[in-house]
Structure formats: C-alpha cells, structure tokens
Image (tube, rainbow, N blue to C red; front, side):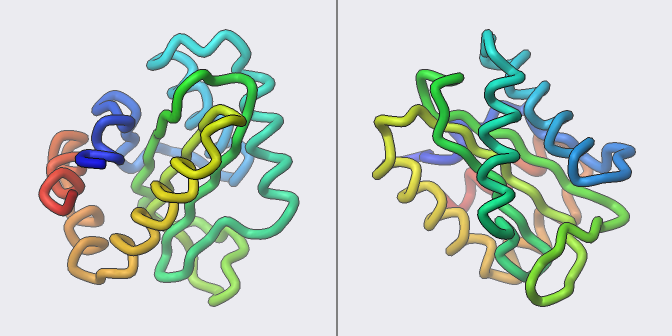
Length: 152
C-alpha cells in the first residue's frame, strides 16, 4: 500500500528529542500522543497491551532502532507515533546499542497481516543507514516525516 507509514503517522505524533528518562516514560508519552491524536478512548488499555508485548521480548531491531507495538482492542485502525531520542536510551537491545529511533504502532486485533506488513516495511527501511541518518538529522517533525515519505 502506498504510504503505509505516512498515512498512519501524524506530524503531531512525532517527538523530536523529548526529555525522557526511562522506557516506561517513553512508552507512556508515546501512547498519550496516540490517544490524543486519534481520540483513543482507552489509553490505559493501549499502554497495557504495549507493555504486555514488551514483556515477551525486546522490540529493538538493532542499529539503535526499536518498534514497540501491539494488537489491541483499544484502537479500530492501525496508528503510529515516533520518537527520535537524543541522547539515545538503553532499551535492552540484543546488540547492546542504545536506541535513538522509536516507532510505536498499535493496530486492531483483526488486522494481523497489515500489522506484520507495516512492521516488516519499517524494519526494511530502518536497516538502511542512509535512512536512519536522515531521521537522526531531522530538525523538525516535518523533516522527519518527509524523510519517510521519500522512501515510501
């Protein structure tokens, strides 16, 4: 699908260098962002489902990237938030690298195949060092989104 990511990632759901000190705070802030952007009525449920997925194992991809995600009854369509962290944060990646790029995705229970499609597309993009570099150098939310739109 064209624009699989940019259709679901709103400019105001992108955080550039937020002051955040822990993984839990990060996920809570990103969930709040999604809840306010997409009028999610059960942000607590959404956060619970995201944390539940984190307990199953790391959502870090390596290269300083992580994609926390959940399939949840709290949303009726697939939506995303993103954060660029500076300084990077230790999120327990297997390669030991701290994380500076985080994409959070929440989708409804029934849309498993779409969920996987977007996750694998994100993973593929984030494997490209030139793409990561553009996101790391983005000065504004718009720059960050534009970098994604150019690749889609």
